Length: 198
Image 1 (spheres, rainbow, N blue to C red):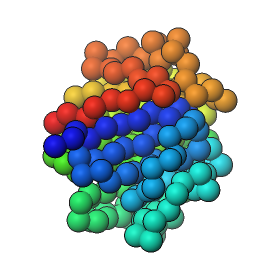
Image 2: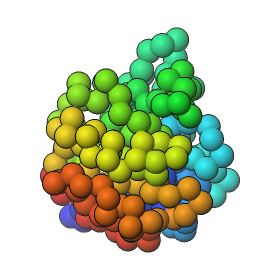
Image 3: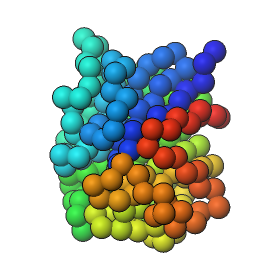
Image 4: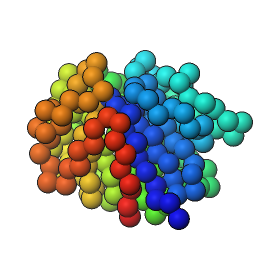
């Protein structure tokens, strides 16, 4: 059976393909790799560089979850699609309001992945459950910088932490990614694929 894979499109955008071949897009906008029809699209917030749904080929059954569905009346929602379970979680900083932004915990194929969205260090990070992969923004302009993200990584019970959203206007900035010093970091450049393992 094929393993789940993460294709990093760049900036804050990535695509997950499950063992069964289902396709998930998170914060579509940057890079390429939008050729596979979506089963699920997750939008963490409505900034233009995270919600370019027009790039995605939708199917009749494609489900789109946006922040307004994920956070309703102050409650972070859960979604069970049968093949994947999703829990919305807090995401916020001075550029991203707590009321309009979320992160997501994704559970599928025995894996847990934390799609943090655009955020800085939050109190709630220490309360998140153990996870296999966490993706954190580190641009230092609209989100936390690499040093703050390193502190966040220490709070998280994650096996691997991947820095993304590394530089405004760029798909990827390796020099900034290198500043992220978590001992469990994984560096993934735009256009690279990672096989996700339990």
